[in-house]
Image (cartoon, rainbow, N blue to C red):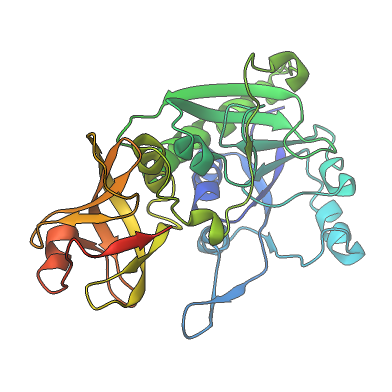
Length: 323
């Protein structure tokens, strides 16, 4: 079968899922339909905002479905009518068996980790938060348990110590587009030899990647310099690590921190206390040194470099971060 004859249904929602879809369309593969999440109101005006995948599908006149329930019989009938040979899932949602078992060639997923490590909703964030020096992407066939299917292909990339999650995300997104196309080609040529994840278990700890909530993003200033540094870059630029600060007037304000540096230095200051020159430098005492904050955001304000903030906002050594 030629790639123009292979009937593909594509499922995805965020930016990460656009690149593989784009590669398929531009590569001449036959995408017979796209499935994405229902529209949701967003922002202060609660305006309906299309997902990036929906916008791409509309821009390229691709048939589109946005089911509320994946077991709804009306949706299943529409899906069957597309007569897919293969389904591809990238950053979508958990599928019922009636959906993933429908195509004759199966359904494969692109996951942003080196499975079986970091099964779950936020693999890129957790790899950076945990200070990993390597991550990657995996394509695998879907089965009942989430992110546990047989692995088709994997590609690893390094994580630099200065990379935040946005940098790693964009690197994996581009790599993912290529890997999806390569996986489709391998399936077309019958060159796939899936490997059960049970045969790929690492010698050490098997880490998970649970969904990240607001409270997950709160900084614990009792941790080590490196742990906090990795935590901040693992949540930057989104959703953003945050803390509560007692300012020079004694007010408690929520601060988001997007960029920082490690200062390894012996000290006896209480964890969370602030050291500043009031002009350029903001440093927070932690275990093993200080976290030098280089970019941050106050409520209702835009992101600023530390020196920009200090031009109009008073901080002293009496200020502190709340544990």
